[in-house]
Length: 390
Image (cartoon, rainbow, N blue to C red; front, side):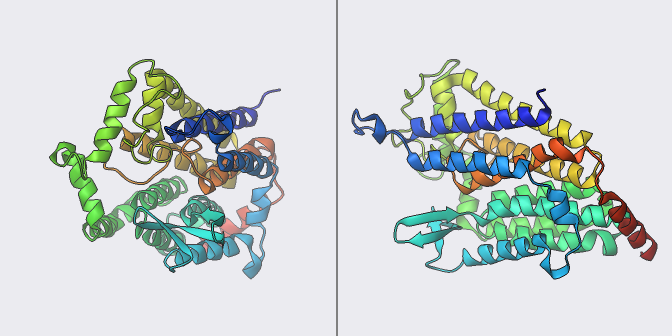
């Protein structure tokens, strides 16, 4: 019988398949010759295979037992967070960090030109969701209290987002927004978060004003035609690609913006290439696939009786859904340009693998978490104990 978990896996495979096709199309260049093998980007096929494997492995994990069992200093989530912060700190070390377009968001692990690039912020997306799910489940009885419930996990989220925003404003804002929604849904009081909002807003303004390229992007968004060959070039070329696609597009492989006109055509702006080559039809297919994926993940999470599973499922669908919405808003010039990829479609390695792994965890909810779990009594007792102590 076809379950929601199976549907979710099929949707992930459909998006990855579409991503492979469009990355190859957008990456084609004049003068590549007639040899078909020259068009194939074998690294992307490897990443897609690793992503599918990661989703399969995650769908078989009992992540709740791994995260919720008491293990003290040997708790796997603690060590995963330490690894994440270590990787993020390493992005500021010359020689280890990989800089692209002025931003040091990647770590290069390898020798010479042989190796892989890792983006620590992709780890943070999943680990922050897991951390909130763990904390909110353990502290369910005191989440409405600021000191005992909200403050400790909020400090972790704030530190993570602050480090990421130094190099990647879009991803930092995404993680912060997802965490705020999860905390509210877990029982945190809205007025506690509202009271802290001036600090957050002030920090974001400072991060923008102290980065000339961010100020330039904001000005370009307000009036791209003020500097069409400079700061306004990227949004103008994106709008032009979308406009030239029309209803049915120029045909797969028939786009011309990818030939040196549209920057980042295989990564952040791949949706513009889709619109140019497949038209509004292709755009509706992409949006429809994401809407189906979000609805399926929501159905799985909402039907899960386990609070840890519900928060985890909600966090994953919010992360994927909000990231997709932010990317589409950037490509259609509804918000200022920022470096954020279209999940499972934009060219990438770490992003594909970890996004597929996170969605695999949602599949695992459909496989097992709707059944009664032996840790439920233990967690309920912990929550009651914390509530009495507070």
